Length: 111
Image (cartoon, rainbow, N blue to C red; front, side, top):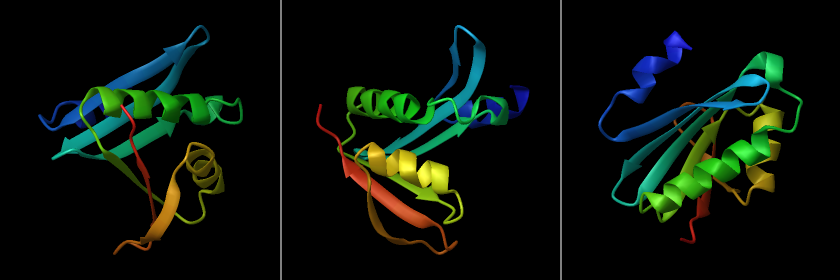
């Protein structure tokens, strides 16, 4: 978990280590600027495939709404099919490809 700590320290970032009854799940991070959020989430490889992605993204959406977000953005490697499926199942839509050849997805937030 110590490798995630620097991501949690910037003033525009809001990050949390996530856990459940079985232990650490991963981390979530929101960078909030002018009502727009860039989200990052990570599920520990040992915890993947357990249905934790969609509830993790739901928590991110709730936290973003609580911090005044109107739009949430995510960038995903095109080969990360699990993350793409999770975001799409959570209401994100494809909006294009960024300069790093990552797929850009976004969704509106309803507070």
